[in-house]
Length: 507
Ligand code: ARG
Image (cartoon, rainbow, N blue to C red):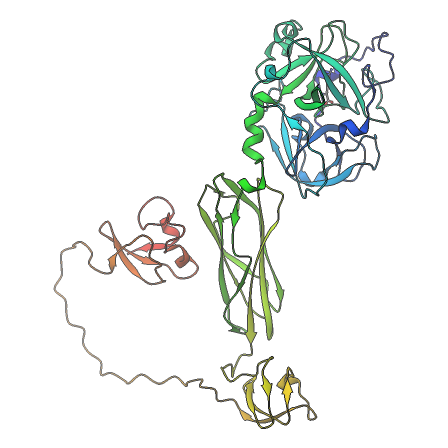
């Protein structure tokens, strides 16, 4: 729900001069001019409660006060929708809401927010937004165009189709004369309207675009923010100044997908394992580009015969990776039966709408008798050939391929001829050593450690390895912590910084 627009709702005294049945004083907009115009609606409704604009890359720009108390899954957008309560336009869901960190709910300074969409289908039209400074695009008195589905008069009702109206840019000095919160406009906001009133945006237009059209080049300069009443003399409409707030947008939206480079292995095949045995894997995500991104919405799931994967360690979720940095997610899964076990990790990054997917799979074999002579799906077996499977030894009765011994009934191609002996070596008892009295060591003064080699950054240490670093001994922890004993990421030098305890135990 939109936060109540208190300032705009103060007094409801419709000016008799504004009996125009339009946005206040506007006309029906041509939908072809406003393909980027976006409505914000509740997830279960078609009724626009705020305006917005599509700026590309799966991001919608709006006013912070429109969405600052909303959850992403409670709202949706309609890009190119120009009918009130209509089903026109492209309806999309929202996965993330970004409010300007300095949004001031008292005077509505920095009234700007971004909505990240769950997908960005091809064919959407985006609007160019201002950067640099407002005055590179317009001078005081120049007409700007604002559109919306808000009230057509102060205290009035909503129109049925998108309305637009041309309002002149007003100097900060003149606008501040209106007093109250108007005295703080200027830095990140601007005003537009006529001194005598009569034309304006109004309640319900908030979040929508105010643009300048210079010879057909449309640039969005502002976002409908607030005003006292609507279209009153001397009380101008206030707009968030996009050029002044552009760094907020740039920090979240990256111009082209080429600027965000997420590197990870899409498909990994692990060695075979045995039903009942745990299989471990560590996914790595790397920022292979230059601009930082934050990994979010990470989850793992199992498919095939995999038991639900468990996350043993996750240094990725909600972690911002600078260029070249990487993070790891260690998982463990098992197999409920013989077959292929697959684990999938999905994640997103804040700067794109892509859902990234990495999978690992491994073949799970029966508990016993798993060996190199095991039956293989693609091998051709000639009569009298043998193969092991399920702990048993089988003999082919005739030419066969792809038929599984354990499902071969009495009329199948396989005949059971004994137990599998496939080199599963029975553990040899270690020879019993006569007990030796441990020599009594003379007590020694603590001295610089000598156990283990000195730590060498970049070496992949294994669990139990001991190293010496800065005169202390460290032991590499067991799995999954040992994953961080090595080179990547390298921020785990024993005893240095804050992360090393994830990987090492000080001895
Ligand atoms: N705050 C209002 C809204 O939420 C927009 C007000 C614009 N008012 C104006 N007089 N220009 O829809």
